[in-house]
Length: 171
Image (cartoon, rainbow, N blue to C red; front, side, top):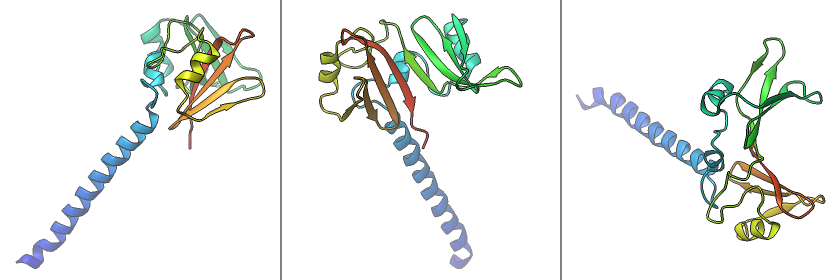
């Protein structure tokens, strides 16, 4: 009698193990998308990564402008009041796809404990990220990699944040 139930028991144990592993993977993926510095960047920006274009319009209204990139004919920049997003564009169908990156251009979107954003000084950015590895380019741009989120901070000639670009590592 016990031998008849052994395959069922083994199958149930495998299913339970796969369920636990799947849950751990989902939690790990979500945690790697979270900003260790403060709140999730995309949530603070009001735009979630991979949001479909139609949903973006429902949430934020009609865009101010759409720029179809000549140097990257499969991409478009969609401009709203406080941010821009890059989405794929299929010329054959004139369809705009899901959000690939977000560029913060307005000063009302702020992040984390130090409330950094457009208009913050270089010193404020360095203070906010003092416990993290930051990469500085020759042009002065700072890049912070948090989990899978890349935060690229560009400064103006007065060392104030001009824009912040958020992308996600696709690997």
